[in-house]
Image 1: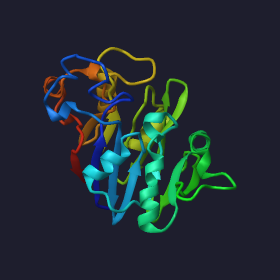
Image 2: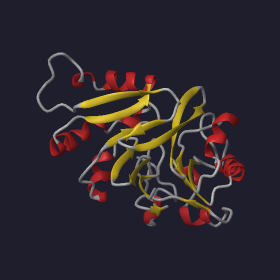
Image 3: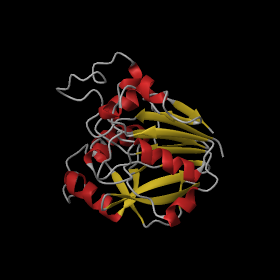
Image 4: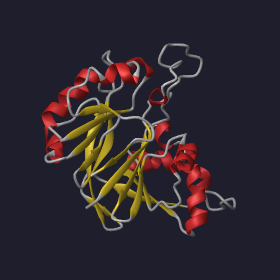
Length: 255
């Protein structure tokens, strides 16, 4: 299974730079410090998958040159992960079919609530066409691509990570149960959230994220969902163990 991962966004809910912030990270001219909301494009065996559809999806899809999209996997219901779903209309028009959306029950209920106009009995012409598929933390199949969900806790909210072959993507995690960590055995590339250096109620900080990487022991690890409070990319990268990198927008990883 050949997998290519493109980081469409690596920022936290506010992105970087943060509106009205004049800190050194937000003022940085290093493009690696300019982070859209977190999302990845996963190309596997000719299929195009998107993990999360945040508010920057239009900009991300144009920058990436996305012409096709087969399905969307949603990690959870927070707006920085679902606020771009209306942009999927473009793929409805281009591909002539509804978009398959996979998520847990709470996430899909939020999609129905936020995008109520896409599900009503009298839908306005041109609203997004969405086929919702409920996940229950058991392995599932997306157009022939096997996917293993990994449930993590975002404070008290269950969030789904996803393993596709030897690639695993986890965001908005604070704790991961041992049973879910075992699903990561043998992973070659692990993507994990690392919000900042100071401890946070619902996100792994840098120290905690490094500890998870040490437990899983992947060949390579990349941190995402990064806040301006973590520091400049260049500075933080120099503090990381061998084999661990800060992801940045536009980074492509092949497995």
